[in-house]
Length: 158
Image (cartoon, rainbow, N blue to C red; front, side, top):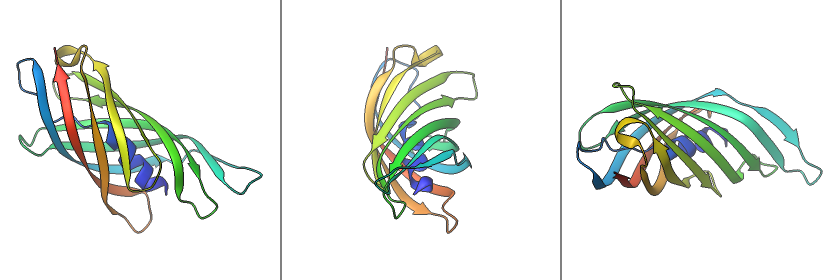
């Protein structure tokens, strides 16, 4: 449902483990806390599926190793079956660090529980950053608007 997509997305997508100050590829492990801030527009399709467009979520991302926190916003669209389960979704995320550095990512998935993310560069230490990984939803609030998730992957900086 929408809560998991936001988490996966943003999360998914936005998994930056608090990169070391030197360039290279680092393992990524982080925990994210997501809240859907805009549910988006819902379009019911003739086959009973629905399309959710222009949804927005906010995540707090915590590096599991260093404890560094960052703030991330994700916009996403999703295709849901008649019962409200995700068939596919796509998101775009912008992560902001305390020093002003930005890290961009995209994420996509085909279910409510996991998604794949890819880093797409950024500013400061994230200029030209690449990497990818998987986001897994670990819990969802009863109202479906908040999730906790785990990002595991790699981040390469130049």
